[in-house]
Length: 285
Ligand SMILES: C[S@@+](CC[C@H](N)C(=O)[O-])C[C@H]1O[C@@H](n2cnc3c(N)ncnc32)[C@H](O)[C@@H]1O
Image 1 (cartoon, rainbow, N blue to C red):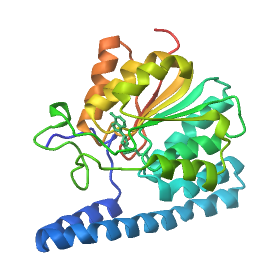
Image 2 (tube, rainbow, N blue to C red; image 1 turned 90 degrees about the vertical axis):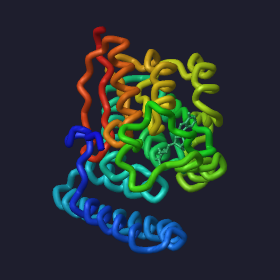
Image 3 (cartoon, protein in one colour; image 1 turned 45 degrees about the horizontal axis):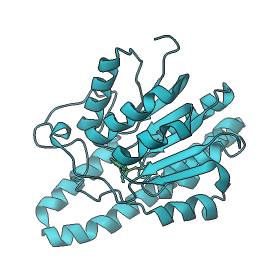
Image 4 (cartoon, protein in one colour; image 1 turned 60 degrees about the horizontal axis):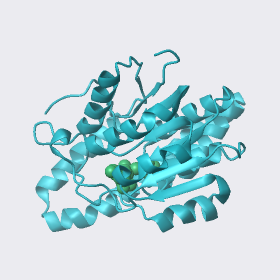
């Protein structure tokens, strides 16, 4: 299998052991049983990960670091609703805080919302800046099919299991409930747009206006490329582009590399330590 630079995809020991156990289980037990057990096992794994995340709370409290305490609490709150791991959520937290602290105006945009966890995180962080819109784009039908550009040696990336059409599904109603009932975000600055990016992004681009943070979490080549083609020019210099799947999906990486090369833009990609990466849009181009 093709490899990705280790800086962009680093697994914890726990993760590696879980993967190994999963492979043994997949080989040893019948498919129907494996498929049935996978959902509950994955849910239990996520609960465990969330509980383990509490270990970061203690040092934050002991050092009295208010920013750190707020970060751990915010990430802990959204974790059950997100497919993004804690490192990815923390990286998203940091870029959003960065644009707030540096007073870079502009919208926060997510392309690839699923059940709304990372969107809720960005919504919570920007709730005190009511002039900052939050735009959320998703099919709300799950992932489309991958295309030839997504495959290397027959696989699309470092997923635990293949991701067929409809994977990573979150419905419009689920996300609405999460944002407006569970987290009580104010409705008048949140814009949820349902549909395939190819049909929605260009037509909304003028309405979005300037972008401070563009978070792309869409796995596949066509989807990621479409987001960059439609919205990169709206990102303000000094703003950030987050590519959640840069290190984990071959197509996402290829879309980013090809897009930046086509624009002759040199950026420093900052890995989140798990599979995602972000970069700051250069001031001079
Ligand atoms: C990995 S999930 C997003 C995870 C989410 N950010 C979270 O916090 O859990 C990928 C999402 O991208 C959406 N998606 C991918 N390609 C798309 C496209 N071309 N148009 C619309 N939605 C797309 C899927 O519907 C899916 O919800």
